[in-house]
Amino acid sequence: MTATVVVVGAGPVGLLLAGDLRARGVPTVVLEQRAEPMTETRASTLHTRTMDLLEERGVLDRLGPLPDGGSGHFGGLRLDLAAADPAHRHAGQWKCPQTRLEAVLQDRALELGAEVRRGRRLVALRERGTAVEVEAQAADGRRERLHCAYVVGCDGVDSTVRRLAGFDFAGSDARRELLRADVAGLDIPDRRFERHARGLATAHRWPDGSTRVMVHVFATTPGPRDGPPRFDEVVAAWAEVTGEDIGHGEPLWLNTFDDTRRQATGYRRGRVLLAGDAAHAQLPVGGQALNLGLQDATDLAVRLTSSGLDDYDRVRRPAGARTLTDIQAQAYLLLGGPEVEPLRQLFAQLLELAPVRRHLARRVSGLAAPSTPTDAPKDRSSTMGRLTNRTALVTGSSRGIGRAIARRLAEEGALVAVHYATGEDAARETVESIERDGGRAFPVRAELGVPGDVHELFLGVEQGLKERTGEAALDIVVNNAGVTTPAGVPPEDVTPEELDRLYAVNAKAPFFVVQRALPLLREGGRIINISSGLTRVANPDQVAYAMTKGAVEQLSLHLARHLAPRGITVNSVAPGITDNGGPLFDIPEAVEQMAQLSAFKRVGEAVDVADVVTFLATSEARWITGAFIDASGGTLLG
Image (cartoon, rainbow, N blue to C red; front, side):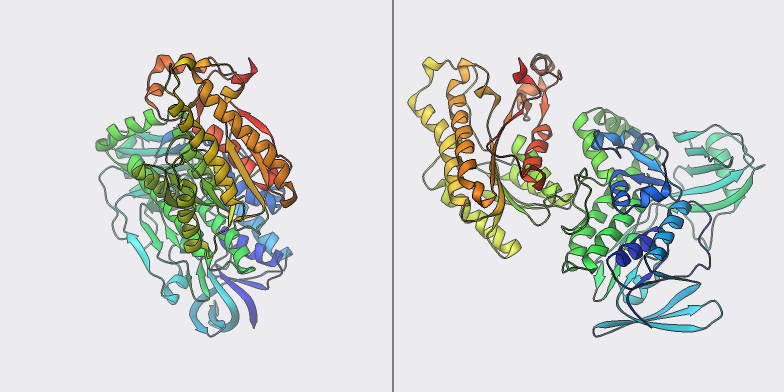
């Protein structure tokens, strides 16, 4: 038999992939070793990005209303996942038993025309030129062969596809283990990552009255196992940690999981690909493994039906590595003994800071980096991948607002030129932080406001773009770099040299940056100039600085008319008082005083402005040009 794609594994990842392929008209066969769908629920948590993907495919309608999963956690420390994007309708986490999700995904795949063959064990895999020969053995011993264009292993941590195709699975073995069981007949209190002197205990009552218990005894290491743990092991460990006897209960399901960390060194070998746990093994804490696998599947389905297959490894492997790193940190915080308590206390304090909560919540929720290529279906409310395959230049982006803008554009998929004048270490740290999150960026040095400044800048920009994309083409230019007058300098004391310097950096440089960028800007490009709320509020000590920002607003206004025939929008964004990392923002009294100027009674964060700039850079803002955008948190309302 000939099939265009053979998917091995009928778990959620394989079934979602099969349905997506059939929706795109690709003949697909799913091979599954199990004769019947599994009956135990291993994973049950869906995160924001996954909810978006399922909604786009109509799967949420099939599942029906899902219960709110409550607050999330990071290593057992409370983390409200709604902090990732409080305005998102799927903010937080949602509960859906894996058995239910599998059943719905299988129905969808079958309705779309996929063929699901159960009771088939993969025994051979041979790539032959432009095809792959697959051999599977049925329960009665019969063997059948299929010829296909691609094979995708979605067959879990013990992937036969990965082994037969010769993928390297690098990483480290388990050092910590949790015992897990669903037990009927228990009457014990619910617990959520309850740490005791001897270990960790979790208990949760299912709707059917059974109780899911998980237990880890500190300082114990996993031993060799041929199968699930015995119930008496779970009973003994539970008693050691909590002092409670659960031996009278009836075990319905027994399982272990550990902190193994492994990842395929490549997600593609010729015509064989990996997705989900076949590509990565990790502690299944907080539901991240299931969500990561489902996101692998949706990305791969698009790439298998477009010209972007070569980018599958480039995009999804860094996303997997990032998640594995987060999970490893959580495993240490969650399962470490008394020695990790100082670290847990420090993390608890950090989680009180809004930027930290948002950063970690976005990572756990799948909103930290692009996960779908440009021709994938997108929910307009989603903040993922809106700038995939776009290029951007952000001047003055080694710190403060510029850095936040560069990071957000990269999170949306843009390749970002990170410009700096003198802060080389800061610029490289910005680039490294973007790359750690799965994005792309490169540093460019040029001092603005001096002869030859823009020429030097664009030599670096064009070289960096050509090396990474093959052409020197830009889609987005953000003029953020600027200098200001020292605080407390009255107009009478501003020197001609100081005024010249302000105009050279704040007004002249942006004009010539745009002029130099115009031949490189694609149709439909975006120019965003960073102005200041000081153009609307009188502050005599900043009159010279405000004059230069007024010039920037005029630049936006007139260029908007000039460039409209090319579909290029030009806008000004005016921040108010924004924490740029300066020493003033380390003084609580000063911060409180400044916060009173905002309608929201807080000082702005750099990401508040970056989100506005990012929106203006997307196609959603195509009808906005020549605008002055007040991003001051209501400071200009009076």
